[in-house]
Image 1 (cartoon, rainbow, N blue to C red):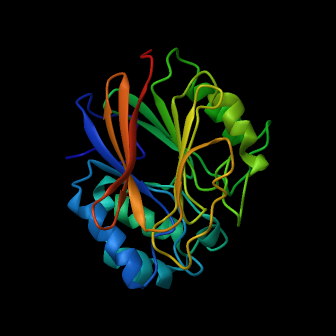
Image 2: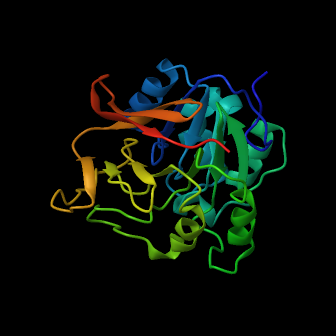
Amino acid sequence: MRPGPFVASGPSSPATVWAVGDAADTGPRTAKVAELVRGGAPDRLLYLGDVYPDGTAEDFNKSYAPGWGSLGAVTAPTPGNHEWQNRVQGYDPYWRAAKQSPVRHRYSFELAGWQIISLNSEGSRGPSSEQVRWLRREVSRPGTCRLAFWHAPRYSAGEIHGDDQSVEPFWGELAGHAALVVNAHEHNMQRFKPRRGITQLVSGAGGHGGRYMSDERDRRLAFSNDEVDGALRLKLAAGRAEYAFVAVDGRTLDSGSVSCLGG
């Protein structure tokens, strides 16, 4: 049995991880993204938040469960802005039942030689918040083989949301201790040049609504696509992660690798 996302344990052998957000409504586009990910045989799915329209119990049952529910055993979720307000009736009971485990809005686990850290961009996140103090403890061990994920990206060339400075405290703690950060929120795909030693990947082209344009003139960008739906695939192994943004038709739009130092 694969470990649940709320337990800090996991295999050290290589693993395939898919990550996407903004991919849960009743439309055909999100259904195709879910089909892509299911067909990719994920060892773990990072669902990066947003169940539409309001993250209620009905929305989870009608919008999320049909496409993504079958991956519940391997899903590591993080809350998005669309479900946070109604988390008591939507997010929390859905994941409590799916995981048969208490729901935490921040947690970490081990996978393929990496520490995976789920953070909550919708809750308290100031420099002195309990969440940031917890993160500081989580990254206190040596090494950079860590991947952190949450919903709203610190950096974004998207023309709808843009940079979110409120999550800067996350970056302050992760700098020098992590190699990858993965987010959604912007309905497109973005890869940033390394910043403070971290490569940030935005995987929000999950198929909901209109795709958000990104400013390709942004010099911080290494890649962006705001024309197709798709998801991010990561292949994790000790000391290395291979990433690929994959379109719903199977095309690889961007790919590469990131190295890290083990602790």
